[in-house]
Image (cartoon, rainbow, N blue to C red; front, top):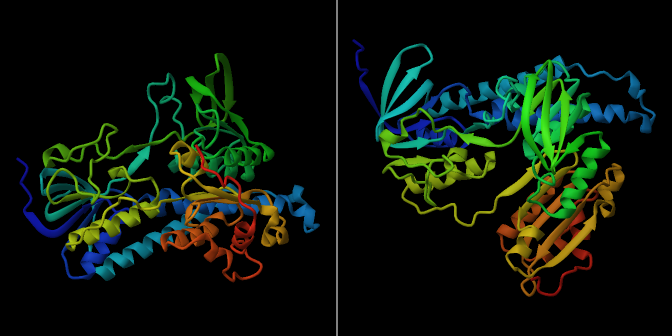
Length: 473
């Protein structure tokens, strides 16, 4: 007969150690609270281990490879002599991850938060049973509980042959130590497109398949046009309007994807298959029903604007709470829950979420796109310039793309900003700060930026002649 472990009491018990979770742990433990964090595998969550940071590490390696192959235009080297050693790319990425994990462990030690490696599940509304990775169990009870279990890659098992093909997700793709001869990617969203360009630059033939008519189909037409032009110029094949009918073979050897495109059938054959078609919340087998925590129709934890769940004293942060799937959003979820636990009244309502696609060049947007403004009948003036008018872009000979901004007539307030170009994410941050501060676009127009920088292009943007001066219907 199994002996019931003694219940241990904490001020805060956190299930999952992602961005919002770990910040709550370190902050409250640092202020003297007794805090326990339950983590099944990845210390610090997915971002430093298997997602954001490792992928950007590989993307950077791919950019170096691309620059080396283009070195002939500078007469610096023979591009044909350049070879990518994928094992070295993987080793470099893994070295970074190990350093990040060590940094996380140091922060746990410094804060006093207890990191418990194991799988946790609710047994009552405020108690969790933890099956530790060493085979033992513990029972933890918290005055408040945080659910931060994140999401995982979605693989559609209803497609014939999909599961037997053993496709890669972003997790396995980041562990490749060989360059796929032909990588087929399902999904033309952020993950799929970043991997597509990176693997193409590292030496793979790449085909991207998506059921939509365009990549990043929710964005403005000019963004889509520039992005698809970039991908095709780099030799990436786009198969759009495609419905997956079946899959055969095994990823890593030979795999065939059978599709239907506007009534016609076709087959794409590759050596590796990567699935990047969405995310599934990690809510299974964690006892939410015993805690009285309700889920949405899509399976995410149902929360209010303060990130409270349906169970008193139980909160949720990050992707599992249905928050936009970015680490920076989970960080802001930390701010919301922290303030509310301290007696405040912070909400997620109306917060501006920045988007950044880390292709080369990048695409970045904050607040309204033109497509959204038109759909909502919002009047705007449009400022837009090509990147060729930005002197920094000229100096580094990277003039692909544009920047544009929607401005409210009458008030001159910034409604939204989009940029496809070098350092787009950094330039977007300047606009985001101005918008958050309620400054008119003229504040950026008249600001003295350092020369030559990409941010200096904002002066050129807002000195241009706007269009759409009449109401948009």
